[in-house]
Image 1 (cartoon, rainbow, N blue to C red):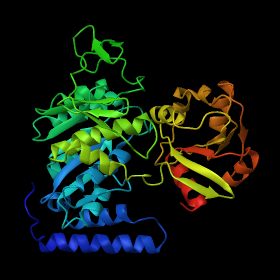
Image 2 (image 1 turned 120 degrees about the horizontal axis):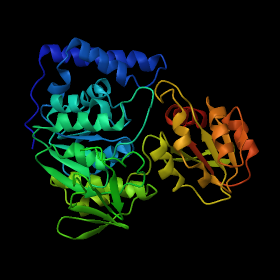
Image 3 (image 1 turned 120 degrees about the vertical axis):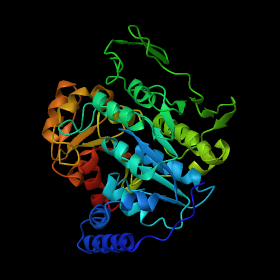
Length: 412
């Protein structure tokens, strides 16, 4: 258990106060939650504040391309069985946002922190985590994010010599290579449906051979480690071989995988899997993801898909044809301005669905759907899109800023 909270220095207290004031001004001006600007102001006053705020906490960091916000939420719910938790539940996952979140955790025992992939090593140095969960790595934000092999190398270098337990997905070769530099790794068989970013060996550059669940490099021998936690259907198998049922309200196999990793993390902090999984049942939505809302007399389910791997998982969640679908894609700064990733998504999975396309880059998406021979219409607004669709629950799939736009429109 982490040490008891120590009083903050005068400079740290001033930094927290200044950050909260900046956040309040931002909220009053209608510019969002203010967590990022508040954190930036606080760190400007005290550059070491993040480490000071985490000093009394048992911290787990969660990083991945997809699923980190949901997994962070599931871990937080599980650890509340053992004590108070502070977490950046809304996904502000860079140092400024993390600092804002931790400033509210003076009386917490645990810090459950989602971290952007690019900032993981630096945040880990600052907060000395007890555990780090690594879920997956795939292409994302192509115009400004590092290539996945480079990100894996940053993780690998950052974990080397770090005194922490790493909980890592044994089914993602990039994650395995990154985590292998750590002295203590708990391997989880969480699955990896998207494999297009892991065909070459991250250790030597050779071609990876995939045989069912197993994968291995034929040139250097780098391969899948033996997992001690396993997702098996609707159950989590723990290191003792006991099977614990997963009964989530969140849909899809990807969330069962998230729950499996979350259970392995919770066990690291002394929370038994049956207790952890029971508590995860209370999670119905995560920052608007999976919410079903009523809008203009229609039920609309809000689904986030930011990159090819995310779209692949989301297509497995939607109701079967002829369920109506709205697709919305933007290319703003937070999304990445390069939309070439659309060509890596298998949109033929939408065959038989009535589809309407909206968003800033709706014409880019329209060209992609036309090539995929998917019937669709293009509309300028979500309201217009709903008028073009037949009855039934609408599946609204959007990338990051388009998802936030939809939430504002429907009042979610």
